[in-house]
Length: 284
Ligand code: AMP
Ligand code: MN
Ligand code: MN
Ligand code: MN
Image (cartoon, rainbow, N blue to C red):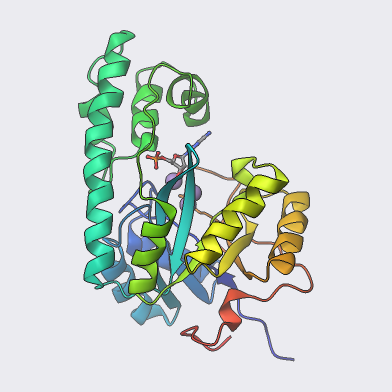
């Protein structure tokens, strides 16, 4: 019998808000039985070169990817670019613009937290960052360190989301712009963890319509943050809208025991896997 390759097409390293260095992420993926891993750090490809060096040594197939932050209808949507050219100047310049917004936003978050009596958040969060990306996750670690909340999850709930004292509205790329970068880099655009946005049926259809119009091809059906029912729902959505179906853990590191590399549900029947796309780099 031919064994199916294990694909995990969504993961983070220390280049964004993951806690494993790219080489360690690759080693862990291989140990977990992953055959094809996409590194999809938030708004950066900085981790790719180190991951690639590690992958060559292990035989694991690495896919260059990125998870782009997009502002759409007053909310943040994440779009994966899979199999992008990691040297594409259009993509890299676009991502640099998001990095600049992140740096500005970090100052604003720190200023707002200071107004509620939490000092030193900018320096504190920066101590947790290991690459160029400064994420809300890094602020969350600092607030846990300061004893403001017992866990990262609680910090998000009480400080870092809409309506809370440390919230700053995202001003990320628009959908069309982000897809332009991914397409310029020869990648396949995939809507990440669609069930997380809590969109109504009609709003999800509208997002998919605009996404397709801009050249988007795929949707993440299996995700570390989808329940079984959400997976089945998104499988139906992928079939209805003729989108390629992707699968990824959204792994951020061993600190979250609920999510492990390669430990994913099967794609439900009738889905067309993204790794069967004609220009997919690895034989599946
Ligand atoms: P940012 O892109 O800097 O706004 O941060 C977004 C990241 O924060 C996401 O990619 C998640 O890794 C993390 N995150 C968002 N919401 C939560 C939450 N409720 N609990 C834990 N982590 C979260
Ligand atoms: Mn993240
Ligand atoms: Mn995401
Ligand atoms: Mn992610």
